Amino acid sequence: MDCLEFKDERILYVYGELTNAAAFESHLEHCSACHESLRSMKRVRSLYGSSRTPSMPASMRERPAPIRKIILAFAAAGAAAAIMWTLWPSEAIVTPMPTHPPSQAVNWQRVERTVSRELARLQRDLEFQELVRKGSR
Image 1: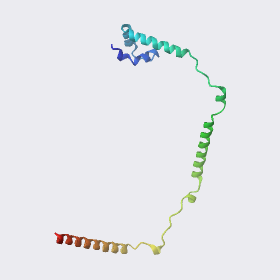
Image 2: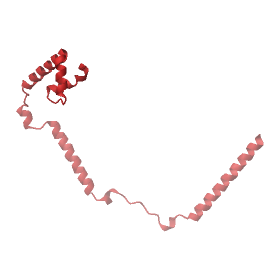
Image 3: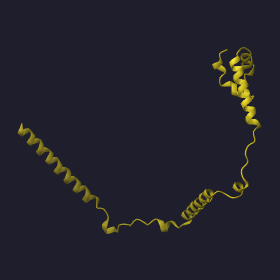
Image 4: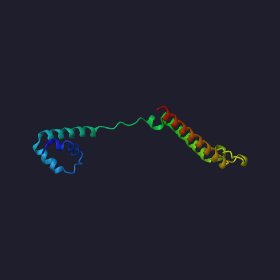
């Protein structure tokens, strides 16, 4: 077996999480480089395992950091604003659209006549421009 095949499996073997440990162990019997690398990894793990984790000072555990107070204040203000927004009467926020009195109602017949006149005028203008182009040739 090639050492590159077992490169990533060495750390899994050190922590006892390798599923195919038998193939790796048979490779270790013939490969001194992998055997030495594995021995080095086990030594480093034992050194880290024996060291104590530093404990946090009591002064830091007892009171929250100032940044936490600021974050909590903003969160409380945001929650209060959201509550006020949902409870505020909607009439105070939205102004109704003005309604047109019946005297200003749209006269659709008049609109249709105006549009028809404009279309006829545009058609005449196009015909005139076409005549001018033919005459200038």
